[in-house]
Length: 195
Image (cartoon, rainbow, N blue to C red; front, top):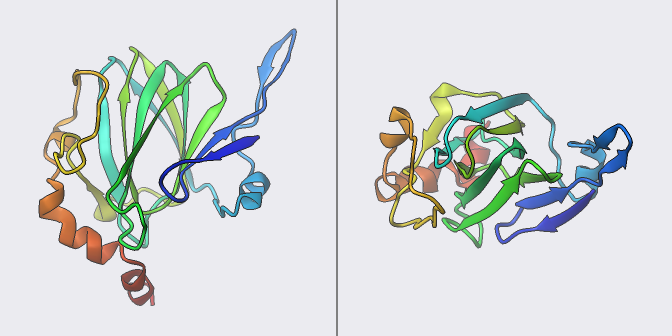
């Protein structure tokens, strides 16, 4: 496996080394030891599959508050998608910055997203399927989100939106949510609230 560190600290693009023979292709999608060699401690708690029927579908921007903030390992297994990460860690040098990358089902790439970051995606093809593993269980009480079209984030979505859930349409604007993000995602606050 090879790795490439992206603009947001802790955001890593992982490329599995495929093995091909007459049967087809085999590649590893997760190895805790290889991640530990990169300085990442990631234990899988849940694995999920998301299927989007139409190109242009947007999901997100989603995240969970501490202590249930999730690391995510994202992989497109069919079709392709435009993946977006928003750094929501107040102490980070890239706080509120956006990073994006295209993931394609025909390659062996996965994206490792650090905890306390928002995540969203837009499908680029019909019937796009994504698998993702998380380090924490889904917790409805800690779940939060931001608007996909927030002008403060100015995400450069590659396509017009074809499908967006009612839940995602109702997410708040960043300017209305910034105080909660700054206090609840702050490392100092986390160490106090976890005691």
